[in-house]
Length: 362
Image (cartoon, rainbow, N blue to C red; front, side):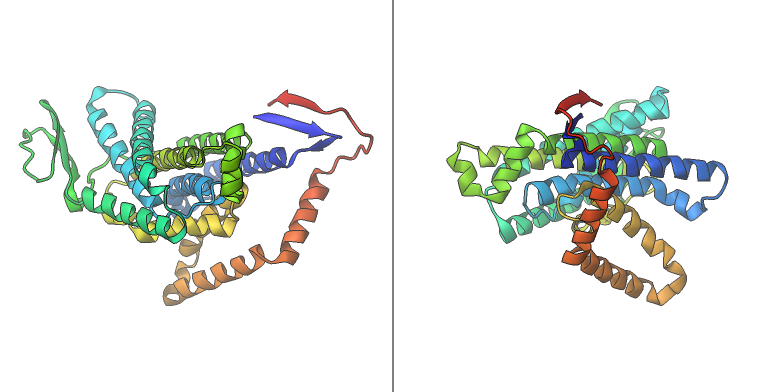
């Protein structure tokens, strides 16, 4: 990441990058300290890894919805592909004696690769569509992935890996079932940790932030703002949109692997249309193209339902009211002007003497 300074002021990109990394690092340090002091409830401890996974999902989807300007409703499909691929890879390596961290890294990488390949293959025909048509097709893709996982059976024994569309895998007595069709993945060894989630969030931020500030990122935003003008200057619109879609899918697979290895049982129905909409809500509430907004929205809206559980039957009503209020305040022109002025005051240099433009690596 390059830090750009002009006339003693940080560039908008550098400001947003500092805010995004700062939010994540400060939150990690605070939670770690509070957890070591025993001040974090067991309920919140169980939500730490899912929060990291949802942050990865929100930031990656923002690359498509906010930066590329395309509406995707199938992000849960990429998440499920990464989750179950990660579970399979982790299960196959369980008897290898490798440390949990190495197994988790292998699972995350394989989940990202599979989701990235699916994103590339799906994106070739899908990204030729626009608007509502694109949203409908991506929604259908997410449902297709969920239904495919309902008929996939996988297991491992001394003879190797077995994959079929029926439960008769012919496993040995010492063999282990990894995927059990509609029953999903059972008896999964939970190896995901909050520290691993923190590292993956930083990796996601690094990739997305650098794409946004790169030549390719500016081309993607040019295609979003005016497709005809972008084509007139020689930009391959399909190529740049496909790049954003593929990277977003790979990051979603990475988040899915982290999410899947945090539960001992995981059902395919978990990754339905509601999950895709939930991730889209994170992006919209945080602000399209606003990375640190997605981080805050994903964190707050993941904790909020559990925090309101004491209200029992009124919990979801209160949740809906909070969403409406956040939407009103987020997209209010007066609130935007206030927050923009506040950011300018925070990052305004005390020295008003103009300084030469410099570039340095951080």
